[in-house]
Image (cartoon, rainbow, N blue to C red; front, side, top):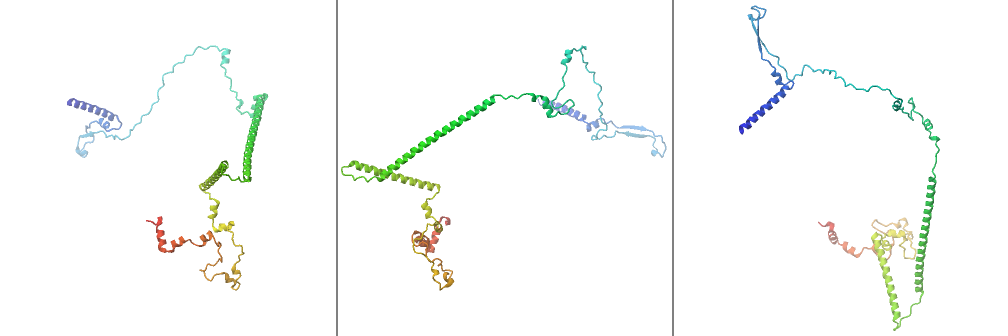
Length: 348
């Protein structure tokens, strides 16, 4: 088995070498091709015609070695292949024609092709003007006829639009009447309620119930219950309005007035002085001091105003006097420092 495999390997190698050598030898300018045609050296003996002791060191015969000049395999070819024109081809196949026959008038008329007539250019190739083309077209000679269906269609559209307008007006009138009736009914109900309330207000108070009058006592209880229900309902409505105001971010009038600044109150005229006597500037009565009577002796004195704006009330207490809690809290420095350090932003 090993011998057979070695034999096959050797045979394959020889075949591949032969194939590669044939490919290489066929290539132009290869070294193998240059060395393949090399002939061995030739030795030629000849006797020169000039004989003498002084010529060629007295030799009578000579031997010359003839060797072919080496060829550079990378040298480009010295000759170019010229393309020779092809020779004439084989003669064409002869076309066999039927024998000529005489053409009849009908065949001649059938084979006649009419020339192309253009509406835009004449025989000489010039463009025909538009007015000449329209005049030669013959369309002006035709009479324009308008169908009666157009008039019928326009009349039908007009009638349909009028009917639609009438229907819309009728529908709007009916809705207007219904709205007026509904409004009258509501006004009548409100009028009846107002009349009943007026009669109830003007009616004399009911007589006091006797010991045996259980029916009158029951009626009074019903009226009291109704009044309580009305009070509760109105209270719920006020609470609901207050919640809606708080939800929408709107403050009530009382809260707005309470939170206003003193300057805003004075501008709106809400701070009306309660004193009825006429107020005068006391500095005007002191004429002995001259112009300097209205100014204080030093910068520390704060006597610009001689009287307080608010003499009494919650506003005066909150504006001019600090509260007791504030006085107690900030009176002592140690207590104030401890209160400040207890804040969340100062905690480590």
